[in-house]
Image 1 (tube, rainbow, N blue to C red):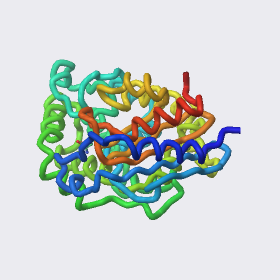
Image 2: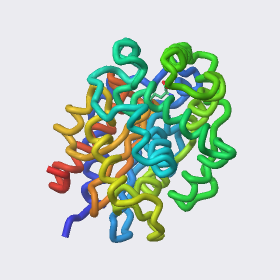
Image 3: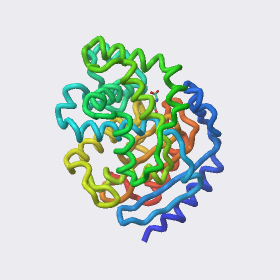
Image 4: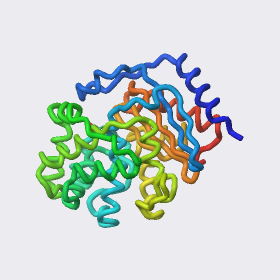
Length: 304
Ligand SMILES: NC(=O)CC[C@H](N)C(=O)O
């Protein structure tokens, strides 16, 4: 029997002695206000048991973690026709890289880099009646939690400094791969990134990817086939130019966000979320990566 709580406590002790060389994201001014010394972990087993450590109940902005949830909704809505507008190859580049997009005629490398997520946002705008409301409801349904909300101050903070994302959206528009107006698509995108969740809520929302498409309450939201594809995209593209490093160190499909969150999962076994706001130079949580490396090494529970 694995002593999960002991392992989480050990990780906390080990990491509290590590010099945290990361920095909080400051290109979105609202995110720069967060204290970099938080550390939380929540573990949700497929059997229903839960284990937690540190600041696992504090909410933070999920940022790019939302890209997996928007992808799931878009895939649920329009199926495989999605792959005509966005590819499924790792980019090997930072999340906001632009030049590949021009070279590859406005087809983003994958749905988890910014340009890809902006195309997904466009798909949702075209296929949902009340896009922001409907998407938030989808996230709430997956998590079984109606308290989940957008953070308008963070969305606005990102909008006024979002020059790179405006560039990506305009490039996509020039190639005909954005059907709605740039301003409307980005308004949706900035809001999805602003969603506030804690580690436990993230493990609940991602349960569907560990459980062949069924959520914690055993309701089917996605087919097992779609979940297989989404997990493959998380494994190969979830950490941008550090996807190889995350597979090597941790060995799980997962997704990070510049709010300092990471969520990862072992199919048929567990979901786990970490929050530690200081980021490494690739934009992934410095201590979160270390915590997950310790966890899969100590438990010997990774996909490999
Ligand atoms: N990696 C991230 O979390 C980036 C998301 C952020 N909202 C951006 O578009 O820059």
